[in-house]
Every structure is written in structure tokens, then in C-alpha cells.
Image (cartoon, rainbow, N blue to C red; front, side, top):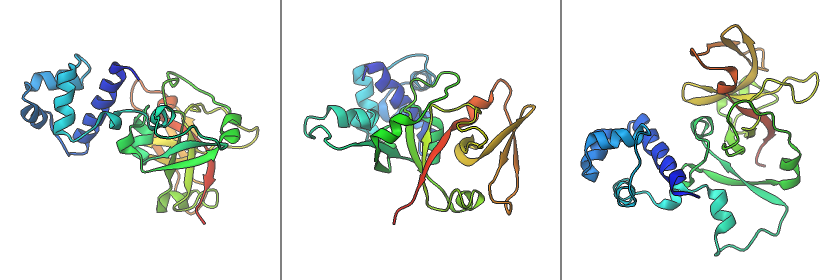
Length: 238
């Protein structure tokens, strides 16, 4: 992983903490000894940080460089772990907000690592629109109570939902069958069938006891910007 990618992952981690109310740019400037404008420029991608500057930020935020690296890359490169001899790939389970907003998942955002059959994952067809090449392709999220029941029996509360984030097109995966999608909404995700009417997304549940939802798209945004990924597998623990 290149230094520039590490800086971008650090930037994302800091911005998420600010959005969640855990941090402010002013407080970070005070803790590191940087001017507030310096921190603001870094967060807004107007400048980078030196190695010494990154060290300061990591130290005061109690982060490690390992927190900024894709766990899959760590797993592949770590000399302390032997190469996998089985037929499974590691897929990261994360919160919906992380799946919706973070192209590359940092280790501090990983809740669990799940193993899925490599042959199954390789058979899945992507259907990308826009710039998705750099997005980590597969992630898993768990269905909440209302989310699970709104798509019952295709989903259920607590189900593990495998998302293909390289499939952000409304093109049907199978002829005559509606795709289920994780859709970005209010900083996290909801799972629904998706249709388009003008500049609005129609989010349809599977369970008729739950209402159809209508979400207006922001100016300049397209459907692909809201589709986090296609639901390609649903599982539960027994």
C-alpha cells in the first residue's frame, strides 16, 4: 500500500470521527500543535501530511498504521500467518455506515471476519457503473430488526448479508427476478428492491406489512451513487 493511500485512509478515519461527534478539527489542531487551517486543508484534500505529521495524528488519536491498512492485504502479506490452504476467502463484516461510505475498509472498522467459499465468490458477476474499481468488492452487514422484517422471508433480523459493491447497476442479475440492494440512506444503508421514478428512488419492501419508501436524489447524483451493492447471499448462524 502506498503512502498516499495511507493518508487517504487516515483522512477518512478522522472525518468519520468528526461526523460522529467524537472529534473536531479545532481539537485535533490543539492536540497535535498544528494550525487549524493546516488540519482543515488536510481533511479537505488540499494538502498532505509529512511522515512526522502523520505520526503526531496517529499518536493523539491512538491509531496505528495497521488500522489504516486493508485487513485483506495484511492477511496476504503477514509473515506470521501461513498462506491459506483452504478454499475460503476472508470477507469483512462491518456496520452499514462503513459499507455505504468507505471504499477501502480499515481494520478499526471491522467487526468480524467471515469465511466464504472462494469458488462461490468468483462466480458472481459484477455490473459496475462509475468509478468502483478501487472499492473493496465484498463486505457483509447484518440486518437489523426492522430491516430484516421488511424483507421477510428473503431476509430476517440478524441475518448476515453479503454485498457485492461492484454491482451498482439496476440491471437484473437474473432474468425476471428483482435484485435486492443495500441503498445508502442517511449515512447508513437500507436493504430493499429499488425502482426509479424521475429523480426519486422507490424503495420497496418484500413484506407487504411494511410501507413503500420514496427517497429524493440530490442534485447531481445518479442512481449508482446510492446503490451500495447487490445482495448476493443471505445467511444465519445456527
